[in-house]
Structure formats: structure tokens, C-alpha cells
Image (cartoon, rainbow, N blue to C red):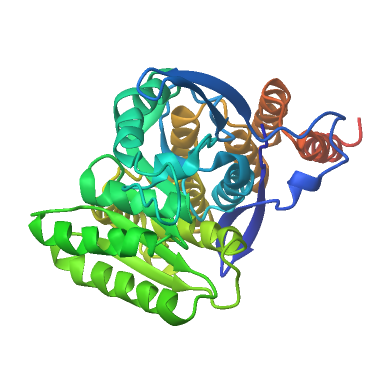
Length: 399
């Protein structure tokens, strides 16, 4: 499992945490395969077939047994899982989104599963969307929930016919997924059934608390008009509770748009996760209030990220509020006692106070945890520990 240690920086007098990006290519680490996820098979009674799926667990999953995570389900996992998993890991490591579980659902007969109607004049074998939705709701989602530590928040991402299915779920069962990502969806299916269904169903809904991300590609003519129609429908649905964003990508092909759109969709799904510096500068209470409002907006519990709490702790330390600072750092550890990053930060704080005995203890524990949980940048913790040992040697007069 790919993991990212936090680097340290000071910006405008505020210590913030940022990951050491690029560790996916850190070949100085121990030899071995780069593993982004696992593959498993699940038998569906409703579909009468075995279905293959892929799972990427967050970097903190193994070390945080009491923590649950939002899940992003990705249709057409055979083509869309790997880049989505990489995007999610990278953005979470950079503090732009919370850590998520990514589940890719490998397709068998995608036209059958993703389309509402059998459009025989153009494609044969369509019309199985209702059965596939039932498979997700009654079989697959409960299976994932019983196998992994998931939070209630779920998002569904689909491209092309998969995007069409994602919009279908929005119309038929909006509570199934709180987030809908439709990338270059097939809006022209069966004389624009997806658009007609949305136009008919949304006015009948009293309250739809969903976020919908819609991205288009290099469409022109009627396809471009369909994109604009969908964008208008979603914008008009704001009064029903739908939050939506439309991102046109005229420079991207129908297939290629999935790459930039998926990364952008993940950011927008958790828009506001990065707290503004102006809020952080006003202190803990303002930060907590900010994330409480964000939780209400997104429809999911968003705790104050450890990186933000760490920044607040070092703010307090630099302001001379040492007791408050160390209390906050120890609180971070209490919430995530197996985090090497948290102990590394505690060591940094002790070093700034010339408390080298405590710093050494924290640094040794950070290094031990990094080793225990196969941290991808164990060498970083080796260097940190060596640095504290050198400082202590100098303090002891070189003995």
C-alpha cells in the first residue's frame, strides 16, 4: 500500500504539513512491487455471474483500526480504477481531500448493465440498469460494508455509458450515493432517455441532497447541445438540494477526458476540505466551526485534519503557549496512536524547545512505527532519528 510521509515547512510563521510528493517513484526504498490495490471476486445472485472488483485502501487503513472511510465506487474498473486510485492517494497525501477507499467494479457486459432501455436499433442487449442498480444496492454495497471499514458516505463515478448509469441512479435512487460523478456520459442513448428522465424525475423530488459533477469532452453539434441541456437541468435542480458543477473539457477526447476530470471531480466532491489560512489564523474555535459547517454542506462528518491541528499546535508553540501546543500534539497522537508522522511532529516540537531526551524518544517511536507499517519512506525517519542523535551528542559534549 502506497503511503506518504509528511514533510515540514513554515509559511508566514505558521508551521504546516505537506507530503513529500513523488514518493510513488521513490526507488531508493526497499525493493519490491508497487501495489496500489487488491482484486477480488464476488458472486451476484441477481446478475447470476461472478463480478471482479478492485480495492485501494488508504495509507492509514492498517494502522487505524477504529477509523472509517468514505468510499468512491468506480465503474469500468478495468480502465478507470488505477488512475482514480492514484489520484485519490495523491490528493489525500497532499491534504486536498480526506482519505477514501476506492472500489473499482470491473465490467462484464457494460451496455447491458449501464443502460435504462434496450435501444435495439442502435445497440443490442441494453436495458439492464435497473437490475444492476439492484445488484449494487442489495448485494455489492452491503458486501463492501461488511468487508471494509466504511463510513456512510458513498460516491459513484462513471464514464461514458457508466456516466449514463450514474445519472440514472440519481433519478431512481438518489439516496444510494451522495456523490455522483458523470464523465462524458452517453446522453444520446435511445433518443436522449437520460435527459428526459432527469427532466421528468427531478421536479417530483422534494429534497435531493446530492453532489453531481458533470464533465464533457470535445463534443460538438447535437452532443454539445445535450451537454448544455444537462448542465442547465442540474443548475435548475439547486432548489431541490442538488449541488452541481459542470466542467467542459473541449481539448479532451471522449476517452481521454476521464483522466483530468476524475482528479478534478475528487477535489470538487470534497470542496472546502482545505481550510483557508485566514480561518487557521483565528484559532482552534474558528477552525472547528469551519469544519462543522463543511460537514453540513457535504453531508458527511469531516473532522479537523491532523495536518491542520498540527499547524495550530505549532502556531501555539511559536506564540509561547507551550502547554497548549503540546496538549494538541498529544491529542493528535491519542486519535492516531500508530501514526509515525504524529510522533515525528512531536519530536520536532521537543527539538525546538531543546528537550532532546523527549525528542529522541518520540523520534525513535516514529521510526519504529514507520518500520512496523512498511512506510514507503523509512529512510526519512532514519535521517530524522540520526539528526536528533547528533544534536544530543553535541549537547552532551561529543560523548
